[in-house]
Amino acid sequence: MYFAKLEFFNPFSRSIKDRAVFNMLMNAKKRGNINGTRKLFEATSGNVGISMAALSNVMGIDFRAYLPKPTPKTTEVLLGVLGAEVIRTDFETIDPKMVGYVVEEAKKAGAVNLNQFENDDNFEAHYKHTAREIDEQLEGIGKKPKAIIAGIGTSGHIGGLAKYFKERYDTKIIGVVPVEGESIPGIKRLETKPKWFFQVDIDEVIEVTKRDAIEGAIEVARREGLLIGLSSGAV
Image (cartoon, rainbow, N blue to C red; front, side, top):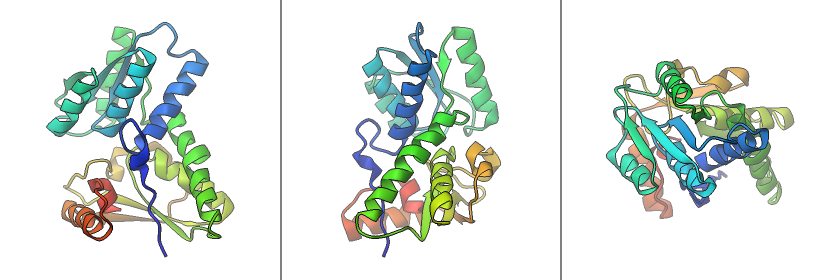
């Protein structure tokens, strides 16, 4: 028996990224990090940017999204609808160089960069909330997870799940990344050095092709009637 958690019920980006963005913003507000600023800069290629743009509107903050060159046009359009300023960079992927560039741009402009790739509030969102929610939902039907499979992006998600479930049940944790030379929106190879991946115990990492991801998404659509993204198709 297997289960999939449908994160498209989250209201802003229709993805799991709402959890990390909400936690980062709320904690930054509590600490006073965003008091006195009305500008937020972030490196993003998709759902984090959409979620951040939406929540920035709620909080009355201007948002600027820095996109890598291959970002789909649809992402740029959605960000524009939400009122975000969009900067399409020459970076081929969001790597440490691009993240560093956005950090410096934020400093120059007196803006806040929450930095999803280094911000422990990203990890905390999944360790304290996503993982506990999964645990409680499974407990409600008398189950404990033997294995959890998750995509690797910033690694906040898989890192939080790994820490929580290893502490309690020694659940097997399996990560999913694109094969070398290919890209799948939402997941990245370990060469990007995802921070929390290296701080927890991941049992296995599986490489998948973009074709695998597309076929997985189509299979779920035709069998379950659910339209999912390519990162979910890969998983």
